Image (cartoon, rainbow, N blue to C red; front, top):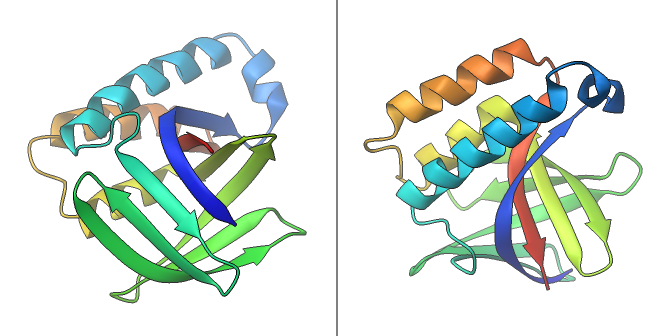
Length: 149
């Protein structure tokens, strides 16, 4: 619950062992760099994506000047949030909170759904294709957003 402001992309793996394998950390850094570029193309830059989760299960998220609304449920056991957009699309995100920071990470294919729902898939297909290729090489890779309060 609260208002969270985007700071940078996040990349997580289902298993920390993957990061320890040769190239895992390098791949994470490469994906984060590419995500920065893709996010910028759809208007997601530090301070320009804001999520607000309320106690009553409502969520609003603002990308630049556009605001979207929906509802959410939080699964504390699995540390997941399910967001249902006003158009009825359901998206699950893995939540990590540490102090005043939060990460929302999605199965990598779901990030494409978010951009599509926000109407932001213009002129970024080649970069998204490169990201999808990297994701296929790392089973269990999750991508998303880091926020702060």
